[in-house]
Length: 82
Image (cartoon, rainbow, N blue to C red; front, side, top):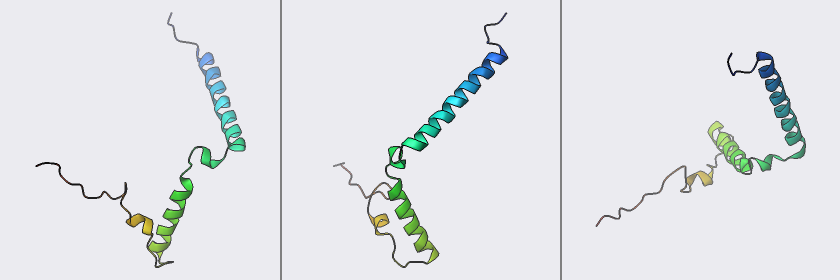
């Protein structure tokens, strides 16, 4: 015979894993804050909503933070070749 577990054992393992996952999700939802897993989410929300308001015409002020050099826009680099 093969070394594979019986289908009923796999079903029991799946149910235990699912219960553990749901239980852990409920505990984390009840006891932790949003900043635990995504501490920068407020910054993303502020600038994306600001940009959305600019695009929709609700404000005339372009988000100044998007004009600063950074990951979204690379600054020119100098070549070190002689």
